[in-house]
Image (cartoon, rainbow, N blue to C red; front, top):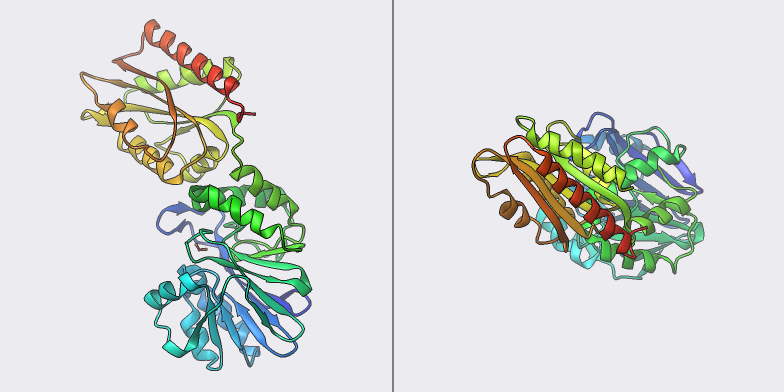
Length: 393
Ligand code: FEO
């Protein structure tokens, strides 16, 4: 899109990817996404913060036709959606120096053919004057790779955060206009990208407390001109506090597991526990990830397929293990025809989740009154565990 001034001398160049529906061949993007670059015009020097995905390079290069000189290109993150167009930018501006964190150097050189003399590493806390504006580099690792950093401009009280606080949202809005919509997109983004690094996110949030800013300009989604709501959301999502909720990914082949799951949902609701159930045959895996941000318990529901779990339940469990949500309790329910290794298999898939297993209910064939009694008992165990846990609010 065209250059849009978001603060005096700071322009947003958003490449809006309206039609993209999958990120990294893994993450669903129901609302598309954007890749934001920012042009900073100081009184003496000009800097470009990040670039764009090579697929949309014209969305960046076309608006830059009117910009004669760029002195610095800042790479906050080596992933290609922000750095993939750096080589073209360096060719367009032969006087420009590429600046990045110490860990980014190797990543940028191994992903892009950066000439030896065009790249310089900046240190954590280093300041660079553009004249009447100062770029201060702040290392914020693991948002989302180990090399990530932010840039802070004290004169404009603005933080450029790249993936950190981002939202996958295709929009013409330069600034957040619909907080509820952005909250949903940012939570999905946090769940899929940031949640595995929750401890480091907390440290990064604490590090940012020393900076005085009233605007956050991320590299996905609109700019926050009132950033308190996204900062509070990140503090909530990354805190140890959990909700009195169960996430229940399940799938059923011939109906028995489905009957058990529906009964269990009702039993949990009777105990006052909120349930997010996802039929894995049709669900948006991003919705499942979002529900895992807050829940205290996960219960996997699966039939037995050739002794093991259904592949969809296997995948969902494996994904939950990768995402490392803060939940503390787990259970497994399901059915089988003649024999099953489901409990051993699913239990073995979650070494990253430090959970107490509250119960397993595995039934041969169609569920009976005895099965329902076991599910009632499991629902009571979940409710009691949540009630006793001081982190469940
Ligand atoms: Fe938007 Fe991790 O790249």
